[in-house]
Every structure is written in C-alpha cells, then in structure tokens.
Image (cartoon, rainbow, N blue to C red; front, side, top):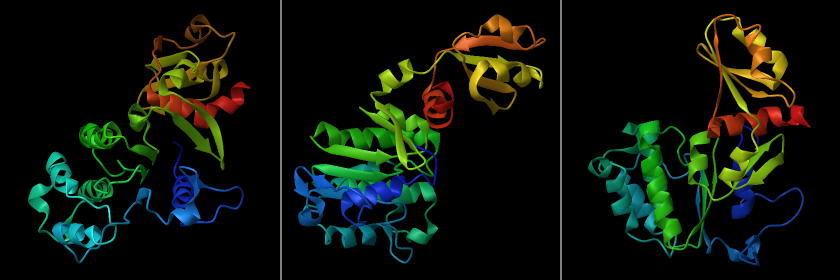
Length: 258
C-alpha cells in the first residue's frame, strides 16, 4: 500500500517477470521467475485486459485462449459483481468500475497458485469494494496466494499482511492488526476553522484535514489538555485508529516520530 506513483505497479511487473529489477532477483515458489514463464501466476494490471472494440464476452473468450489453466469461474464472478447482463456490450461503453469487474473476474479465473493484482478496486465505488473482497477471498479459500497493490486504505481489510511503501522503499510491514496497534493515539478535532492550528504543535507530522475535521497523531508527551487550551469551542477527542489513519501515519508521518 502506498500513494500513486510510488512504484507499486513496477513491483508487480518485476514479480511477474515483465520487468527486470535493477537489483536483486525474483523467484516464484523457488523457481526464478524468468524460468517459470508465467505458469504459476495470473497477473491483473490496470486496464491490461480491456480491448474497447471487443464485448465483455468476446474478451473472456480471447483470454481463455491465452492461459492453459483458464477456467469458467469468470461466469460466476461476473454474476457476483453484477455485470452478467452487460457481457454483450462493447468494452468502450463500460464504466471504469465495470472494466475492473470484468478484469478481476478474468484474472481470478486462471487456476494458478499466485495472483498478482494491481489496484483491484481502483475506480470502484465504496459500496462495491466488499464484493470485490469476497471474490478475491474465494481464491484464497481455495489455496491461492494473492499479492495486491492499492492506494485505498479500505483494501487493508483484505490482507493477512500489509507493507506500506513510499519513496522506493518499504516503510512498515506486519499484520493489519499489528500495524493499527503501532499507530500513536489519534486525535480528532471538529469545529472552528482555526482549530487545526491548535492541533499542529502537538501531533506527529502535519494534521490531516477532511471538511471541518482535523486528525493527527499525538506526540509522546502531548496531552488533550494542551490542544483544548487553544482549540476554542472545537470538540477535541481521541478515536480508535482506522486503516486510513494507519495509511497516513506510516506513509506520511512516521518518519517524523523517529
């Protein structure tokens, strides 16, 4: 997990054997990826399976000929994701979310031990994210391993382990629960516009703004009383950290807490 432009897609391309890493080597289940030839994996890249001139059904037929382990599972997945009635439309008439539904259905229809999924929920409404997660978990329940990239904190709920990345390096890696436990006390300030000024001196890094709400990570020796003293009529409280808080802390603020 990390912001856009931090190299997540390049990493997946290296893992799939499409890009030569500048350092180190990649093996898939003990075999150098260059020798595996893609037999052990299925790769989903953003926009990588969409051909505007084909229909959804024609796209599925095309990809069924590309991988010897392709199955008919996509029929179940497109039904689960609600695009079974759109399969005869040209891809150029699909929304971005519909394209992701089709692409994910096709990628997960390959019988492979490893699935590399690049931003699987990109362009998808939050109301549909859990449906995407259920489809992905279906493959894991059948013994598959999934490596997914994302810039959406909600996708951390899918993972057994999360690695936060930025600036070309791994900033933190652990279970989602352990990463949440590592987030300092989260302070939430709601109210007058200048309340963020009261928060800034007492939190790690910069406060994060959303509408009239400011959030930050309390410094070790700071207290809520320190913030309330200068916050006027604003509400100052601590809250349980969310995955968004974890993302903001490890990607943007943790370096200031060292």
